[in-house]
Length: 94
Image 1 (cartoon, rainbow, N blue to C red):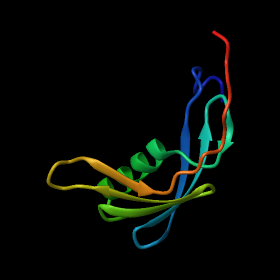
Image 2 (tube, one colour; image 1 turned 135 degrees about the vertical axis):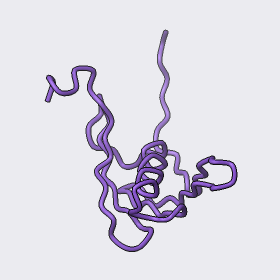
Image 3 (cartoon, rainbow, N blue to C red; image 1 turned 90 degrees about the horizontal axis):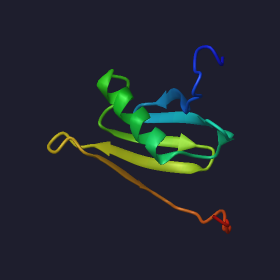
């Protein structure tokens, strides 16, 4: 694994479970399995639409919750809608 990704990587494991619904698991470099990743959800939705596995409006289901992703055909922007939960607070001395 280190030879294939010497700088490590973030990975979304995705499975289309229903029309325009994708279940993902998130692996983030330095952290391992995480509950969710908005950037990864957007990338997964666009990849699925670009390859004909879903439409431009997709529900992404992750361990930490569900997001609605829309890849707009008019402006080519990706829009993410969903809940947000505060999960950590901390302080660091620099």
